[in-house]
Length: 289
Length: 245
Ligand SMILES: NC(=O)c1ccc[n+]([C@@H]2O[C@H](COP(=O)([O-])OP(=O)(O)OC[C@H]3O[C@@H](n4cnc5c(N)ncnc54)[C@H](O)[C@@H]3O)[C@@H](O)[C@H]2O)c1
Image 1 (cartoon, each protein chain N blue to C red):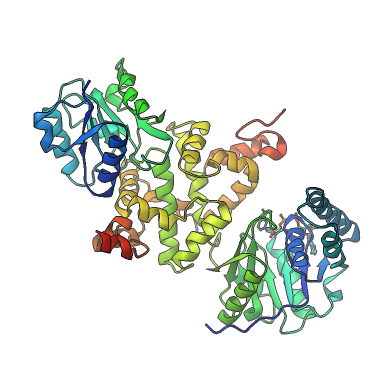
Image 2 (cartoon, rainbow over the protein chains, first blue to last red):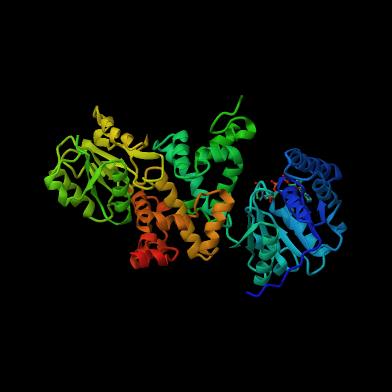
């Protein structure tokens, strides 16, 4: 497919949460001036401060020049609402994972930006096709699925919805590469690629433990011995057992209950118990000091 | 005690096990050589999808003492089923032959027939003498790691055949997006497609659960002989392996 030779100059990010600010940091770090929409100036300020803490730590460690930090911060601008966006050519949406909220955002984006503007969603489980259908130009809508933490994870899934222009997917993928990221083109299927293919790593581990084949610590030891950095249970404690359970359920529902994706009731029990992993001090393992 | 070990099986796994044993000062023998030599153990790496495994194990058992342990690959069948073919079932140690040369851990399983037999643990000393951290797990086809790997490969094979992404993209995505040490498809080529399918079919047979049905693409690759690096072709082409033999 011939590339359009994309030249992005004025990107924007909607939603200054964990993912949104990670994306902002990568864009500003690559020299882009970024417009950021949040629900309120206060929420934005908090998010910016959190990001700045990360930058300061890198400056302290000598991994970033003080000047570079100032330049990055200087490139980030708060915008109170979508209709205040100023001549943007790429918008990356990273608001809460809720189809109705996202569709509303895309309806506004479709109405308030130029017809050429590329509209991307960072959704991890919703259909790009469904989000795109709310705009008047679904061919300019695609998924840009970054991974957490964005500044450190190289992968970006570039998701083509049913109506997305194939040339656009190519061009955006090439542009992603210029950010120092690794684009992978995927179709708009439940869980896209990574969340789908990684599912059994987690759900099968639960079955192995529940049926009495091995203990959790044993599974983690065996899997680490095979070369993984972490076993499934320690990894879930890191990413959050609730997040992992939600991903399992969403892929299972997305494939209309194909048994390959069947979650495990123990996942649900863990979530119900409130032991969600490191963030609550207890998950599969205990982290209280 | 004899340092001879009879090794049953064929292909790249057989070669790898022989190399592994030689490096540790053991002498691997074939089934044919068994007639004239004492051995301290039998190590069988046949996945056991066809009748070869049973036949070879029964031949080997007729030529060894009743105390000699038999380590057998439980990628496709449980140690319990394999033990049921033998006259001294309680000598059987199920194990995973995958990564024998690389992994610090060796997964083993005890057949049901030996669960109440005192002294079965003695058979594990051999694996410990190889420098392995032995993990005793339940007796299921594929044990722990081969089972999880096989399901990851299966899902990647489904995704590939559905055209979700290219094979290179699938491998890249799993390495960069989740820190897998290898992509699932390149990993399958290393391990051998037939080993992966053997685990899936074994689980499907024992549990009757559609969760484990192998991707039709994996079966087709086996029909076509595209079973991995050893064959010169799996998901990827390996020109050098083919030329070098
Ligand atoms: N957290 C992850 O690991 C991860 C990974 C990949 C993708 N994602 C996806 O990224 C998206 C964001 O996730 P997150 O973890 O950053 O969530 P988050 O809750 O940290 O951030 C969401 C932000 O969006 C803001 N917001 C909500 N509605 C808005 C609106 N209408 N306009 C502007 N801002 C609005 C919220 O105030 C909040 O700051 C979700 O779609 C999620 O599925 C998350």
